[in-house]
Image (cartoon, rainbow, N blue to C red; front, side, top):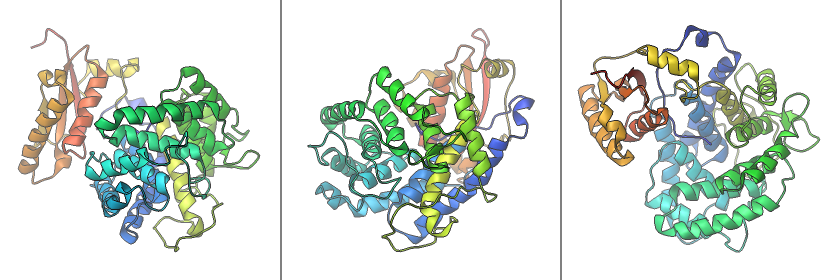
Length: 432
């Protein structure tokens, strides 16, 4: 779920360029999510699940579907979050944490992961705090009650496990695995009572390495609560809304195997399209009792803005997921044939081309990343630091593994490129 971000310029067959109401909906939503996330960093020094985590997950998916984000958006978000965590590092090391305790810590690390932030001393301290948080419980407990985002033990358990997987210390791996094993048993044996529970129980079962049988059963428990209008409601018997609908669709697709062209997913998409407001957002009424000083983040809907930006994040992620990534894996026969038959390119700037020789594709990831970092640094100097002009050209044999190509492009991002426009040429093995 929520994989690393990469943007690829690619010329696809003409039929893919037709007007798409889903793409239009995502295009309307993206600026609002950016405004809400940016507004928070400008007005508050703390980390916000509502204004940072949920926009990050949506914008991560949107960027991989070809939507442009402001230069440095994710790095600025990561810097803000890292500064907050660093300021509270002593509290984490002492086992005290911050307000929101495990949920805040884990969501902050999840957002850093989505932003491409590498492990460091601060993330290690936060991970250590999560590992030692209330160890007598069989799960990570939600200590606050601000439904739906901060109300479920399943939510905290999933984000904590994922944070430990990404940022946990290697020498703590045995302890991490032991704690996750205990959580896996709790997840398998404990049913969810509402949509938030069911969504994060499903995600948690996958994250903990549960059996396919348990995952399938949890997916069914979630999908069978879909309402006649195509949406999901936060509470059983309640009205459908964008928060519950978006989160259910994302979890069912990422973990439950629900295809985006299935009837259930299409019905959910239709619900989201019908309920999106003209400004590109979705409004959801808050169920939480306010306890923090009110401020305007730049996202609309006044006192309902915080749940609404969370809902808009989930809804945008679900809609963007329904769009094909600009480069699909090899299980798309039509795209594979298109790649084999032509040189694909778009908006190429010949001043800055980064060639990735075939021999680089067989190296280990660390070796590739080191090579790319050096090449990208040199290109930055040649184009006055304009990384957006670095073009990656990957040359590969006809039987190249598409997963490897994607991996190399992700390494480019981590090595310093913020925008990659890809031109792929598939060479036959005997071509010189």
